[in-house]
Length: 132
Image (cartoon, rainbow, N blue to C red; front, side):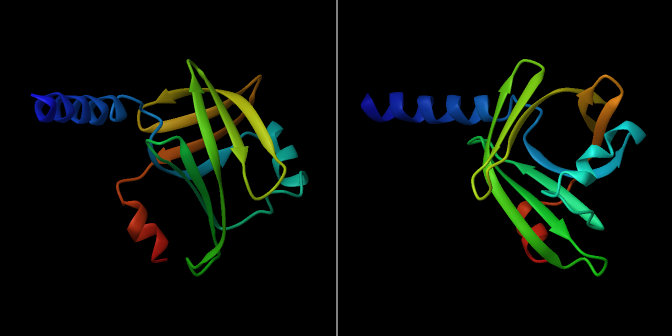
């Protein structure tokens, strides 16, 4: 009886994990002209390609690749979803932020007040990204 309850609980947890549309791999696509302060922050130099990997356990990786597609830097931290607000806290650097978000098709739009960053949902998995 205990085994059955444990199995049902484990399956229910997996089902809950798939509910959040934020989880997955997101590739940086574009930013609004008014979001240039992102480049000036010093925390995020401009790289050829960037990915956000948002895991079910509310951990994330921010992966930066150079022109050749080689991983240059990986920052990690925790994320939290609060309705239409995404909270991000980096663990390796003293940087955190919260931003509104919404979806348009397979794109995740972060920001508001005409300052936004667009990420596109990727089909590859995290292991493939780590091999770059």
